Image (cartoon, rainbow, N blue to C red; front, side):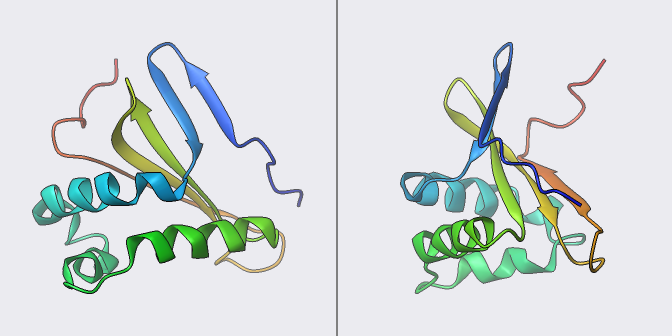
Length: 112
C-alpha cells in the first residue's frame, strides 16, 4: 500500500497539515485541556502531563516516522488554532493502515 505523501490540505476554514516543532507548546496545552475527555480512549494522554515531557521531541519522532514511510501524524487547525489531530498508523501490519483521530474540547459535534 502506498502511503499518502500530501503534507497539507485545506477545506474552507479547516486545514490539516503535518506537525511542525513550532506547534509543540500549543499542542501540549490543547491535549492537557482536553485530557479528561480523551483519557478513557487514548492512554498516551497522561504522558503529556510530565513536567519534563518533550513535546518538541515527540513531533520530531513523528516526523522521523513519516520520513521513513511509516506513520503519518497531522494536526487539524481552524484559523491557525489546533482543534485536533489525525493519524494514519501502520499498526495492523504490512499493507494495513489504522486511522486515529481526536478533537479538542469544544470542537466535537460540529458535523452536519
